[in-house]
Every structure is written in C-alpha cells, then in structure tokens.
Image 1 (cartoon, rainbow, N blue to C red):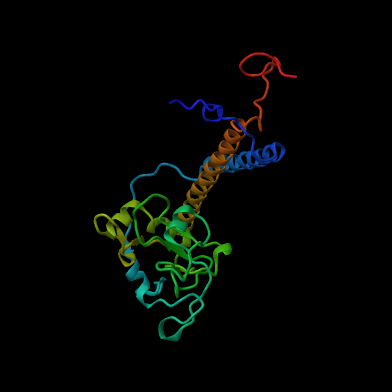
Image 2 (cartoon, one colour):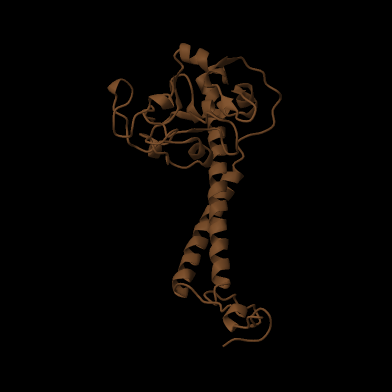
Length: 268
C-alpha cells in the first residue's frame, strides 16, 4: 500500500515571522559586521614591529618574582573547600556571589560567565582588579592563554597574577607568560595539560624596556579580539540571510544591473 497523501509528498514553504523585521535585523547586523571589519582592518594594519636579531635575556620564574615582591600570585580556594555562593566559605569567610571568569572566558576574550556556586566556578576566589593578568590553568584547546583585566572586568573572581606596576608592565607580563614555549615548559600531564604557574618564566628587563613589548602584546590581543568579533558577526549575518532567502520569500535577492532577477525573467 502506497500513501499518496499530498501533504506527505509536498512540503509547503511557510514564512515565519515578519519579513520587514527580518530585513531590518539583517541590515543592522550587516552594519555591525562592516564596522567590525573596519576595526579588524585597523588592528591588522598596525606596524609597530620589525625584524630583529635573536635576543637572549635572563629570565626568572613566577615563583622567584613573587618571592621578590614583583608580583603576587593569587590562587582559588580548592574545590572541596568551597561554600555556596553568598554563603560561608573557608574559615567562615563569605563567598562572593558575583560571576567568575572561567578558562573559556579567557580563551574567548569575553566577560565573566562562571557561577561561583557550581564546582569549578571559582567560589571564594580572589577579586580581580584592573591591570591583573589572567592565565588559564589548563593549556588544552585554542584561544589566548592569558590576558590583562580591563576596567569593565574588575570585581569578578578568578585565578590570577597581580604585578607590581612599578616593576612589571601587565601586558609585557601577559604576553611572555602566554608564550607557547613558556606554557609548554610549565605544563604537566598527557591528555590534560595543567599549567604550573610558579614555573612560568619572565624576562628580566627594566620597566622602560618592558613597555614597548607590552604595547605590542596589547595590539596582538586586540587583533585576536577583533577577529573573533568579525567572525561572529559574519556568521550571524550569513545565517540571517540564508534563513530569509530560504524562508518562503521573507527576503528576495537583489536584481542585477539589467533589472532582471537571478534565474531570468523580470519581476514587477
């Protein structure tokens, strides 16, 4: 027996939503994409570096720098000792209920999304301040390993490095801490690469020599951030366009210069 019910053989294309609203959303997203592409072009156009000979410098571990007072390494409370958000933590300390920065947030370059009440969320972690340096504890996966905290992120909680600004430039510190060779040398494990922060090494340079490196690393971070933003907006724009074109005529392709629609013929 063969089912010849028309509804099973022919799928009608039905438009969902208001075509005018979708068109406005596409235009707004496309304009955001154009601005993001312009910002990416400016970030990519920075030329504040040039070829140089190989340079050797003395380095010190983070542990040595911490002992010397150049920075403070702040750690989160072990997971087993964490209390509930807004409740009591270790030794009766109140656990902050603000969102916490996770390793994924650092890799994506976004704001804090973690929940202090959940395992691994960072309950009772130190509160970060502008100029602090964040380093992911696990080296697996893509994205940046380190970044410097901006004013908009101050007050969240995370595992962090706090440099003495009179001795260490934050972006200089972040750039060298996140270097591939540095992370590889301070990581242990086979499947999961855990970074031992105290083993990371930093060049010993005067502050005035650190600052040009710091500015260059900040520019590299900006290039990554603008690339991620432009990529996200490009995906959003393409998704909206494809949905509108395939959604039963919510969007129509533009006529070419001859006034004909794609595929031949004319439309009123």
